[in-house]
Image (tube, rainbow, N blue to C red; front, side):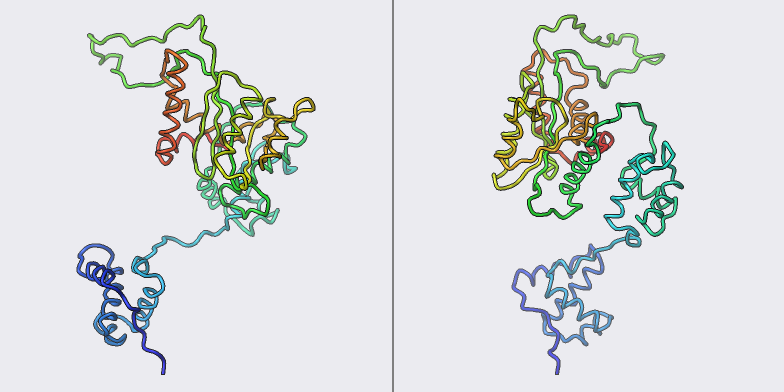
Length: 377
């Protein structure tokens, strides 16, 4: 004879919690019914009687008891998921997004830009998907943050290693985003590093709240302040060395007087101290000369080999691939626009305090909007 289904042994705290759920008049009805079944079973009532009291089937009572024995109180709360499951897998969505952001010429097609029809036909012809409608493709691209935009002219990269460098940087981003499974020896932490500046002591245009002008303005209103003229700037400049930790969504920054290979390695050494030496890290940088290893100076390569670090370079004239560029857009918007700092000390203090605020409020809605709008990688 099969053993009678019964709830596991529960303690006093769990019993009181069950009573609170059953007696509470708010919340999901499903939660209340499941808690009632478990409580009745704890009071030595058999499955058939519980089903009769709760006006349900015996199989549903058994399921509720088994789920509680396995998952505890989490089993009381329904996991509603509206709509049908996604039609395309995550690798398929990544490949569709990647092709959408590429140029048709790169795939041997005689077009300067994609249309929904051309892109859908190409995806099916290449075997990326079995079938996709034009509207479904448009919706998918919108969900992935890709839209049809008017592009400005910029330098096209003529780097002979463009494909290899771009593929490596995108693979590192996929590792950081958890989209691919890391293989043995691959970096566990990915930083995006770049310099921001030069930081001058000059008024920066920006926006602020002010009394409106025009026909309805107050006649006694003071004139709006004008920006200070800066014909001479005898205080020099500063440079911000900044790095963005993709996994932690955290920004780091040091303000330096000069921008050279020694300062670059000094900041890289600081990043290396944030994690144990056994953890391999990767640093994505552009092709600015202090970042490179040359025949004359191999300090960057030697330091990377000695410290379990990979230096990943973006292709020439493709620094837009570096995700820290979007963070600089937010820095300029929140901390520099509309300012006129009297000294580099005040300006550096403003930047450092912004970085502290940004790391504490990484989920801020306005911050995310600015970063997502500027982020093309």
